[in-house]
Amino acid sequence: MYRPIAALACILFFAACGTNYEYHSTESIEDACWTYTDTINFDFTIEDTSAIYTLYVDFDHTADYPYQNVYTKLYTRFPSGKRLSRVTSFNLFNNQGESNGKCSGDACNVHLILQENAFFSDPGNYTITLEQNMRKDSIRGIKAIGLAIEKTGKKG
Image (cartoon, rainbow, N blue to C red):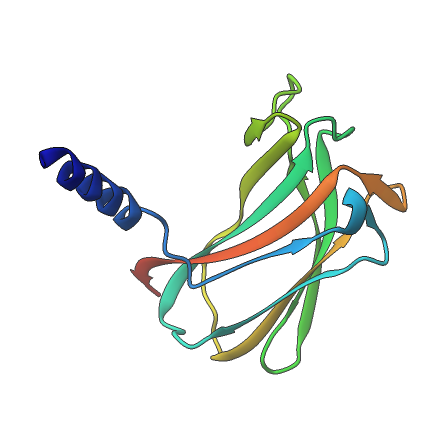
């Protein structure tokens, strides 16, 4: 009788400890081949401009992805229509060739910080766009990319 209750309590405890994202979305990349023309768009709405956020990027990739990192061109479109861009490198593997994430068989997931202590000065709709910015038009091994936005509980 106590085992089912203890199991239910453990499930509820671990579910309560999970991260509660304000926004989370993942976009698949067809045939795990990311080309220059394949842009990944994440559209989200921010209402609480007093909150501080942490933004994360997730890369689902094959264990034999041939590079240590992936260069991206990242664009942010603000509610005003203003658009900023920057080139960002994400390290999927460390210097020893070990994944910076978790792998199971041929599938790896790397959860990386895109920006800490982020704030949004205007409420409204935002878009973050990622473009592949490597030296080759087609890079094989990237299966999906995700964006997660977490409220830190701090106020700006």
